[in-house]
Image 1 (cartoon, rainbow, N blue to C red):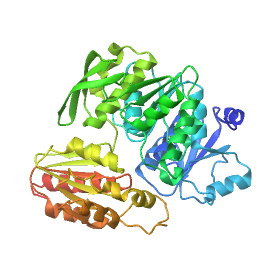
Image 2: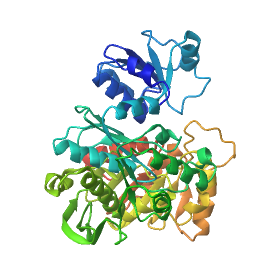
Image 3: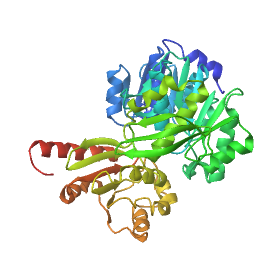
Image 4: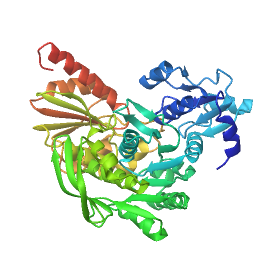
Length: 471
């Protein structure tokens, strides 16, 4: 790894790390790990947020705004791919000769000091990484874990363990996964995503070929056999691999799957033989698949079933992954991170039928993704009785394609959906309040700030119902 000896000197107790964009889920997680290792951690973020406030309560100093002040005279700077070369903090660090590292470089170095598990791939990696972290922790192995979302059971995106084992969710969106050489890798699949980075699927697949080659010689790759693209990568390069999925030929598969609201259960099969019953407290077919991947991972890791199988029902998921914000006889409010057509279908399939009516509010994420995938959204919302589309969350991108939410609207209308409309963000709550019926599910979907609207809508409902009135 580049700068490995320099990093070894800098990642010592008392050294001062400054993280630019510290309020992001990945950067905040790394900040907490470094703090737990005895470093003095500070950073900056563009705006104040709940995460920034929590970091400050944890004695991590955060400067709001990127003014290039770099208070505390840091020994080194950490950035993510979201930080541009013109960022004033980065410009100041380079001018002062302060070493600069990418977040993935630092995280990969830390994982290399332990027995490491990397979880990556399209769709499900956050839930899978969180579930693996939960089971290993509750089984008494005390791993250090960095996850791309808040694990509900712990109220954090980080678990500070004893550093013998390290679980990391590894991001493929910016090629960060190529910094890692894990002992075990869980690959959830591949999909037409992050094509602004890779240009086409062939480029994305090539990156996973490289990643598989970087797994340690005595290590293993656990992969989803339901995905022919990643299965093809594994077959082509003869990696030491373990498969999972709903494909019955997979090493780990599920039979007799039953769904009951937000719970599901199935009969677990290893190499075609029944090995036990699995119960989950997270809904949907996609979470059955996620659980199979983690079970395969832990079995490959060497854990016997009796150590962890009984723990599965105690896992309560990840914030903004089909998170229930309010459950009343009149209404069920759900907040979810789904932003890709595949994820939207999976999430809506999991909650369709919970109530008489399903209303979905969707905020597209990134202009480039919207332009690339607009057509793929055409049938993604067929489980929704009512669909509300709102403006694209740019996530810092320039709108080079001059694309708007209307491209998704037209695609959905063309598919035959009878009840879809575009509503401005600041008008959503009033619209929902005016349209609500009895026994309804309202689901907010997107990777941007749509969760803030979900919170605001939930707060309004709670206030209304406490006053004994309708919304």
